[in-house]
Length: 335
Length: 258
Image 1 (cartoon, chains in turn red, orange):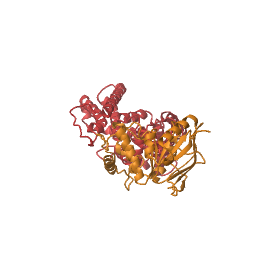
Image 2 (tube, rainbow over the protein chains, first blue to last red):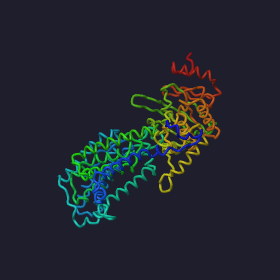
Image 3 (tube, each protein chain N blue to C red):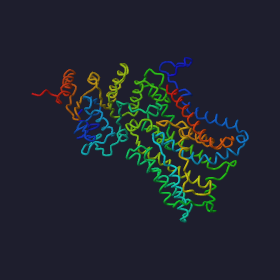
């Protein structure tokens, strides 16, 4: 209990809702990190950060890893981790490119990519639940496996995506519709909304929290924790396929080595967003903000005229500081 | 009473974990409106039996579980709960970081016709149940409060209220009084009596024979995974029961040899 003596003590037997601080403390922490960082950038590079161009750039690049970080939040809440999604991204985009270059209509290619993502996600989930292997270990294995399969399939060569037949899907995924903002940004907002509903307003979402909080309790009360985990991994797979296509159409080329370097961005976004590494708690909105903090650092460092080699230093400092802040907040909230 | 159909019936239920045989050929039946005490030393198999009845453990091949005269083959926790069996576990089975309402409806969430959770209804119902049925002296029973902020008795209150809410036909209480204060213990024992009054059944497990004996109609003694004996309360006094429990623990036999 809080030691503040000023706090009004409720009468015996009276129900008191949890305080604002207890409910939203963690969200408050994440948003303040974001705002403080933004202010720092505005002050150090006002010419860049008061003009829309830089924000338009964030809106185009951040979604590629944000789209995977958001479903990854669910996997982390169940107490697991996925390290293989950049490889799923490459393999499922490869499925798209191969299907379309084989003469199939574009929507069949999209279905192939989504099916590939779904299948890879289920394989991860199945290996984790059926053999009770820690996901940290098994997804290192599948990371190599999926990427290896993709490289063998493509023989290491990419695919050009500038053909006019791609115009529609290109416009849909990465066009600039409203105010010149990249469509992938709107897709990311849409994905956040959908997964917020899934996590907070569906039976499955409830079971995600329960599974990560206390697996045995959840099982004793009839929650099928293995099914919950398999579907969580499957969601990451599907969104990796989407992110892969968006990432490829953004540069109009399918790179067989795509996804490299996105792993830590996505994972950092989840933890910056306040999701507990021990499972049981987390928010997709936090991950969304976390992803844009990560995305802003890259562009911000360059715009602020700091040597780009310092980017990593800045990344490290922001992540360490936020995680310490979260540890302090969560300790205060629990007491 | 025995002319009625049993609520639940176990036929030759065994459970083996690797080399360890936790239950061997357990046969028992629980009738409507009956409170049955399950006694036995540590390691006698009480908790394993409970978890097998609940579908958490699958019985070894050959064991059968019958519910109201029907043999159930696809037994699982979700199935057991949907048929009307609820358990208050020794380990409480709560998810402590989650709010009370999520714990109350764990595994049986209220959804609307679009499959979305009806959070408002769950919170309102959780509040009503906590204040009407439990009335535990507390400042922390708001449905949004995480369970980890509550005391041991309050946590047990959540577990009991949960079992009560779903109007189970059979309530299993696995050592419900462990770690409770005197008044909380009394509330729990009253709860057992209320189950009987409403014509439902219960299996009551407790280390404390002084809690069990007054509350139950019948007692089953488990020893090393076997049913060592069954008594109607009219057949045995508390002193005799205590004496035979000691004997079981020492020798494995209920009755004195020769």
